[in-house]
Each structure stands twice: as structure tokens, then as C-alpha cells.
Length: 65
Image (cartoon, rainbow, N blue to C red; front, side, top):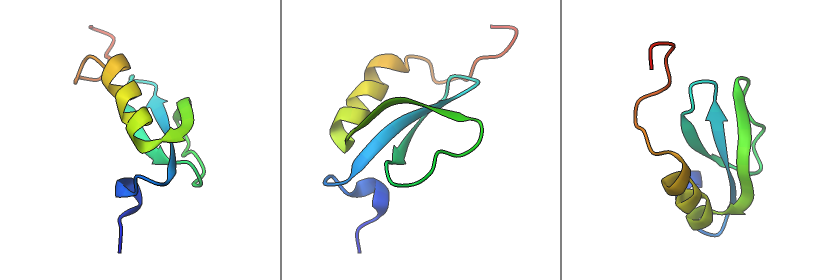
């Protein structure tokens, strides 16, 4: 059985939260509270490319940053 996030044939979206963290999310599942769609729907590799281009920091935003 293929894990849903590993299925290259599925459609995905890229989500972000208030701290700027990114998440790959299956396109057919409702976006959870606190997250916003920033890219997609698109293929898995396109979404991962978008994350690579737009999420340059590994630490979430904080008021002190």
C-alpha cells in the first residue's frame, strides 16, 4: 500500500501556518484550521519544488526574529 504523501500520481497543495512553516498536503483532504493554501493544487514534485524555493528558513518565525 502506498502512503498518501508518497503517491507521485496524486494532487497536493502546499500549506503554510502563521509561523511560516510549510506542509505538503493531499489535495483531496480539507485544510486544517490554522493553515492556508499557498500553492497548488499540483503534482507532488511541483509542490516540493515550490517549498524548496519559498521556505528558506528552518526555524518558525517568532516575535524576536
